[in-house]
Image (cartoon, rainbow over all chains, first blue to last red):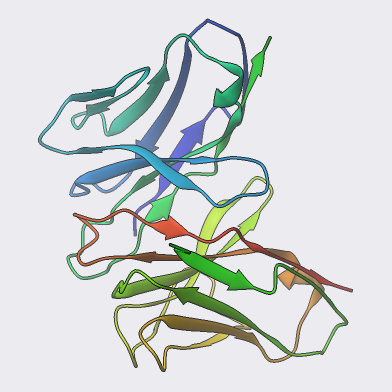
Length: 114
Length: 114
């Protein structure tokens, strides 16, 4: 099955600086890579996703890049703000059609230092 | 619009007791999932359902049972609770194929087994 590794497990950045979280996956047939943000006491919420036919996708201050050859994808947050403090999860779809299981990374706790 | 609702939000059990977690979604989604979240281990899939009357095992199904008698409800049961089942449980739902839909999560149910 799919295996998703996520780094770092914790990340602290000064407000206004950029944050980067990286994930690698094992199944070369995986084709959908979402990122979820989990605020304290809440369930994860989708913030951005990318498909295998796209190398980069942006949505205001967040962007995701995908390198299918190297089997890794990254989340970039620019001009970080206090409300960006949360746990972020990457995920990937396994290659078997109809399996319908999303494999998550182990999460990154991002802290924005005012 | 309530989205995904989990009950109860908190529960303390003694070893060997049984309980059921209820997940209800009002978005008419076909797919529903139960995850557990433990420190440093991310979100691990327990069981899932691709439609009313169907269930399937996920990554960590042992010690749990599920039922999907109605499309909007997905129940997670613990027949004989163990301390290893102390965790935060999240229910999620999505519409259609995983390649096209996002997961909508509930706010979680914190279970402690003494």
